[in-house]
Length: 157
Image (cartoon, rainbow, N blue to C red; front, side, top):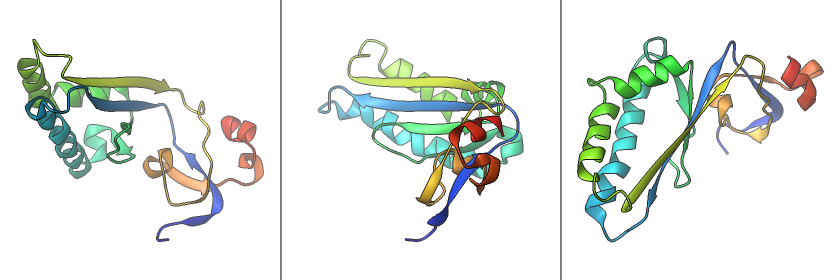
């Protein structure tokens, strides 16, 4: 298994950050024209974000495309909002198109997102026998030893 780290690891990230969950729900699968453009838009956005420098976008990483949704990590809400509203990036035109196409058919396909503002040190992670995953892909992975061996210690580290 490539990339598996046999040790107990934890993620360490400096400062505040944002966890953004986003997904799509296909309510009427037979209406392909309603949901296919929405489903195709996300891979383009993620590819764009991965190409751009993190210092510019504030995008720290994501968990990958999954049917249940995607977890994204951002440096700040201001960065997330700036990307979402930038008319020269993939998200804004896709959002405008979604609203235009589905204005009177919102029940055909659903979209959802949740935004969490995480204060510095107010998170806890553990990865054991895992390749980098979740916040561990967006932050620095460090051994879960010493003061980081237990969950309470990782919350205070």
